[in-house]
Image (tube, rainbow, N blue to C red; front, side):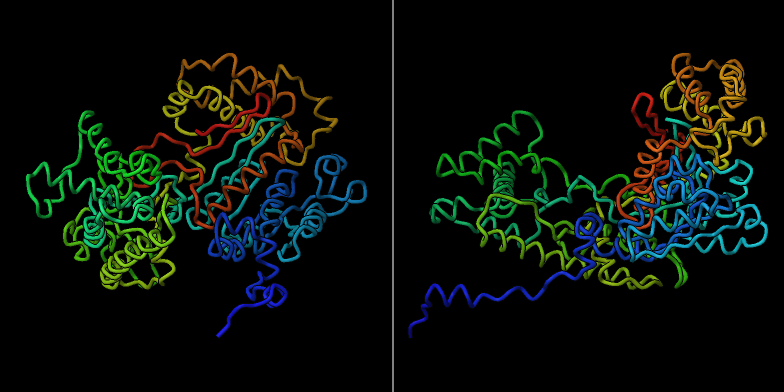
Length: 569
């Protein structure tokens, strides 16, 4: 039988792939690579309220509308002024003047993505706080930019802790923002630290395969394509047997510790080479540190076991996260799927890194890891079944894949960082003088605005507000800022002269300016953090790990575009 084909037949018979991406996948292809379908689904189901329709607020929304936010409401009871038309690119310039600022901005924002629902709300936030408090709690995230301090305090108290509040303040080229939540659980943290391959604690199938290879007699091509984990497992087991003076399987403990032992171990790997240019053995030598780097449970994960240890009886409606942690703690204590190492290990990952190997050998190794991973997954699911919550396989798979990099973050209530305790601010002033000086200056500006000392502190003012130049004396304003900032600090504290001169001078120059450059930069930063909160992926700004008792972080991102830097307090 002749199976050959002519070139014309072979090329014309090729069929186009049937799995052509749908329009949504093509539109969001690049971001799907960052947070996958689960993150996109979370974003598309999110509801966000933004107050008011400033240039910064609309810049934040732009960076949420483009990736496909589900719904946003832009609340502002004001009308567009000439200053607004000059600094907000989402208004229709001169033609928007006199019209509703919220409605005009929403119109411009929706032009960027027809798959997003946007609503303008022209009510006064103060009236809503009195008459429609329940409605404010229907949002997943509320973003407030340069909102009056008294109103902000009421809003923050209402939303805490169920609804995430993002507070953004800016003046000229200075800005800061913070996210307020009680606890934020992150499974897919996208850690740069990869999960352990268990080189030092190889599972039975991997150890058996590594020891079964006839390295001295096998085909030279196959020898040059043995994956480095197999080489390391073989070398380490041989090293252990020699140390224990046994020919049978070793006790599976111990590894090179001293500098001399590590050097000799690497020489052992080089001696296993049959050709001088076997890249897989060179790679094994470079990765030899994995033999003496113990496979352990990260401290942060251990802290989560203690944090959720009291969650022994969870209602059906409770978050699945505590139940997952409880099952993981039980797994770590007893894993019958790993008889040689029944405790002290996290579930084995399915993911293997790239390595020098043939496709056949790589797939063979991957199948071994997959088979062991499935066994351990079943053990984990058995423990999870004892909890009173349901978790689907997608959630379980994501949890197990990232079990080495789980994060639970804590946030601060707004009143606790406005501006913060005197002792903490004093400490931050000595360790982070630039960031703290900027934070103090912006906090002082908010307080002066709340006291109605300067009407130009209202967020409706623009960079060309004539009253600012006519009515304000910069030196007097700097003195007022200094006096107000000193009330935030212990008596006798001195402000850093150079840093304070720069930040107080910038606020005195433009106390209410919502500059397009600052708005654009700040819009990207804030939207990025909001997406992290919504998707529960990556690590957003926080006040530290929830398991830690330390209270030495404010959880504030400070932006200075005068000297072009950002920092975290």
